[in-house]
Image (tube, rainbow, N blue to C red; front, side, top):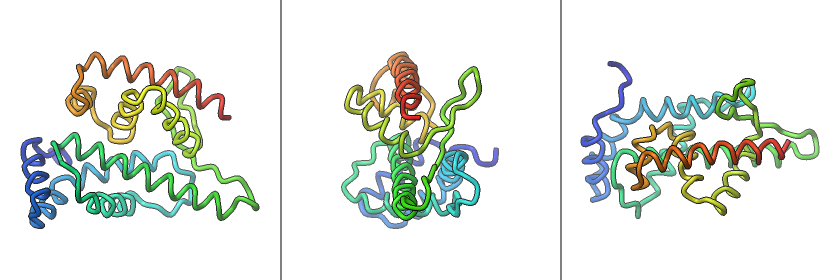
Length: 192
């Protein structure tokens, strides 16, 4: 199947070899995970307003450059890698939104939107900077729930993968996910 996720043990082995300093492992890892990273980037950019120049390939490259700089990361496995990749993508998008907002602050309000999980009345559209601030507040109140949001929404990980990464049960991840979605909805609706 084209674009299928690479085998977990192969990615984990490459991550461990990369951590040990093998540059060929880094290159092989990029080959194995590139299509998945590009799908994550496409999902991240789906909510961007029309005319935004950042393409999924650009987001993957900029995020990967930041990942390569993470020299002290103790890569555990595939889920850990994709979780950190999602964090880097989020940071790239938030940094770009902040720069645009600074540039246009006096001219107009810049709204970088992102679609949050569909609700019965349809998807809700929120400012990316509002989403980032809400996640930061959630992290202060419920750090694990905030990490679940990041891993589920930004990394596209399944509940079982998040549970493995966070070393909790899938039921705990499901509860955190439901709590976080409700909390974020209230928080973001108040930001409008």
